[in-house]
Image 1 (cartoon, rainbow, N blue to C red):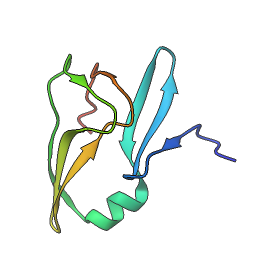
Image 2 (cartoon, rainbow, N blue to C red):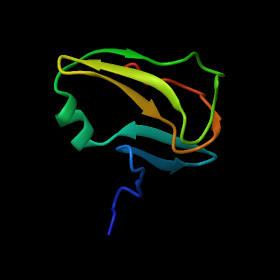
Image 3 (cartoon, one colour):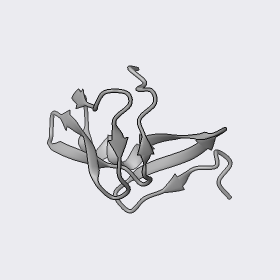
Length: 81
């Protein structure tokens, strides 16, 4: 059972439905594997994203990795936290 209602991709991203939108993030496993994150490059709000294509990049002390969108849609808001 998944109490948070998360759906996971094979690339270690997750999505959760929130009303008419979805919230997307990376899994705890991916965060731990990356180590300390030093930079995140995310496109501007309003950018179209396509399922299974890279749309963002995360840089950590260990590596630079692409973040893939599990869904097609429009980036509405970026969480700066």
